[in-house]
Image (cartoon, rainbow, N blue to C red; front, side):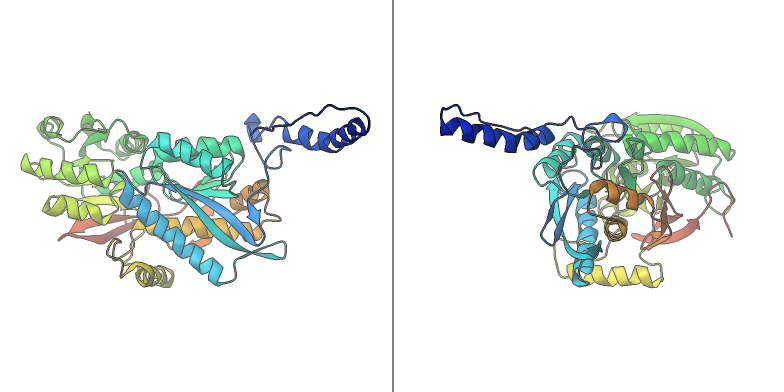
Length: 428
């Protein structure tokens, strides 16, 4: 942020008016040029004496959103945005949020980062510097959330990620939150399901990691620790790069180690191709993934090759709980006739919805529309009854909640198990 000032010289009455003008403008110029410091010494920060005001125009609060609306993970970004829009529709239909006795409608400003972390940084800067948003929702991919989250923290703008599970996301600082579980948790869920007699009963596992993704490498590390803790052995590990499309060499090496299950902790696009090539090579053991698989594109791209595979997830749309089915009904009403949209909501849509509703509920509890007050209010979220489960924000700004395991069966996603505590054996 910069300030431009003009100095005018003159004599007589012009000089008098100039002196008066400087006297009036000086406090404004001093205030505008303060060294901005966010919590922890970072630049920015409401409540720190130097931030611009939240974008509250009349009766509207502007919220920023950045996501992968195009690019490799666009299916995630589109579904995330769909859930956020349903939440906005609901809160505005109910009259908006009430802060300190005043009603505000919610407006969303969306930026597409094209599934690229460098674009995520630019998108968030634009939302903060140009749209001057009050808070930000995003991203799905952990690498993008880390890039955008660093900007939010430095600027003192609260951010909630719907579904970035890498542990580093909220370690950025005290303005960064998430409403999903961490990779450490879902990786342990996968490890428990893999080794448990009522799961896959597999004692030997191999791991195939995307070395260019924070999500994939973090998941790998946590799974490896948990699987060893539960008594299993990692018999082989291989990696691939973001731009790779032929995985046969690495898969052949993994096959030679005779694993009973192979962890593929990447996103649905990679997993579907890996599954096809694995089956072509005669690999018949189950492939295991995380919530990065949770999209119908996995079924479309992977076809029969992904049958008999499993992944950890945040919820199942087949859950009969009223809050889940009400959300599914709202999604179908809004998007069911749109040929460009999925006919049913994915987990990402549900997480986007929950993240937005948690933010709006926190704004309604806040004592003002100041960014720091909203940050403090988000941190106090306890036992929020969401579509993806009961959510509490803990001291590390992560969500405490359970996970489910989803199976791919006959070309469809099928609920397999709920895992509240991976350190305990699965219930029969």
